[in-house]
Picture 1 (cartoon, one colour):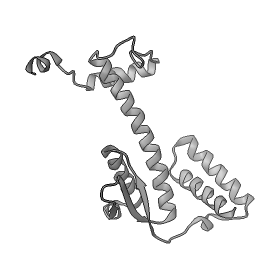
Picture 2 (cartoon, rainbow, N blue to C red):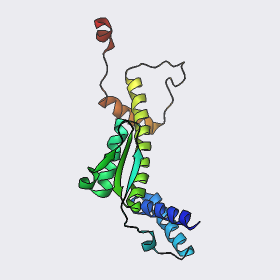
Picture 3 (cartoon, rainbow, N blue to C red):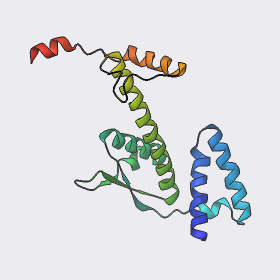
Length: 170
């Protein structure tokens, strides 16, 4: 049971140290409440033992995010000293448990956000190039005012594909 508590406290500490806005403040409050409840201190959570921790990725973009998170957490010199598993989308890095938790939290958060942004970018690209079918599932959707503004900014940045020349060439 104590291992579960320590594990949860370490994750909360990582979020309290690196979170954004309200989630950071909420994590700090919850961390201190739980530390007091279990009669522990923050130093209890620190373990300086360095071990190899492995992380999976599913695409080249996720791999790039992973390396950037490694560099953000442990610095560029240590981030370049990673282990690869040939033929697998897996990378390992020698870090402390606290660093591993911070990497996991950030990597998960950034990958989730990347997928959302790519989905939105794809939608804007489809809209810009009029390659949707309004009757098909996932065809033209209704968007909020904020989405429409964001999409118009993306549409300006996305190049229009000229299909008539490409089709005639083949």
